[in-house]
Every structure is written in structure tokens, then in C-alpha cells.
Length: 133
Image: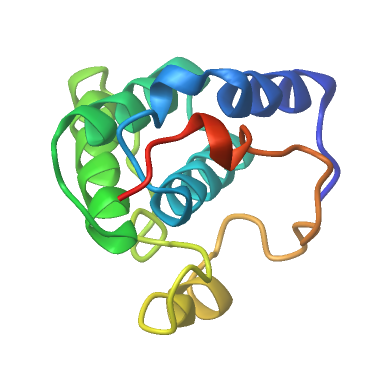
């Protein structure tokens, strides 16, 4: 899948906003940001995706899968409130390979962007700036 200029900009902004994941460990933050990136690539409104990441960060939930589930729930509710379609079955809990338990969803249920490139030059903020837990 080829990224549009707008998507690239939205994803870069997502990774640059330190406050979105400042309460999370590196592993959890990376999983949540990867989920958010996939939502933007699936044409979900970036402002709602960002709000979902922020809500998950502020929720106090721990663990990559739980954070992604929290964010997906928030996003689905916001999309429904705006009369927009939620993520197709299986994509709202898609996560990254942050742990062996959560990686099967990534390789089997992402219906929205099957040819998405696996490596990007976008990086999360340095670990030295994030809380260690």
C-alpha cells in the first residue's frame, strides 16, 4: 500500500507527540502507536485515532493488548457517534509483535492493508524520554 502525503504527515505527527504515550513503557507505547498507524492507513480520521491513543494512555491500563483494546473501543464509540463505520471485524484489536501472545492478530486479521510495508523510517521517541516501568 502506498502512503499518501497526508497519511505520512499524520503518522509522523502521531509518533512525534510525546504526550500520547508518556505514561507507557516502550513496548506498550510502540504497540499502541503501531495500532494507531494501522488505523490511519485504514483511513480512520487521524484526530479520532489520536484521541483514542491519548485515552488509552490516560486510562491506567497496562499491557500492549489491553491498551490496544482500550483504544479500539474508544475509536469505535467515537466513529459510531459520528455515524461512521467502525473497523471491520478483527482489525480493531490488531496489535504489533510486542509479545508472542499478541502477534497472531497482526499476520492474520488485518483486512484493511494487506500489502503494508513492514519497515518505516518513523520512530517513536527515544526510550530515555519515556517512563520506565
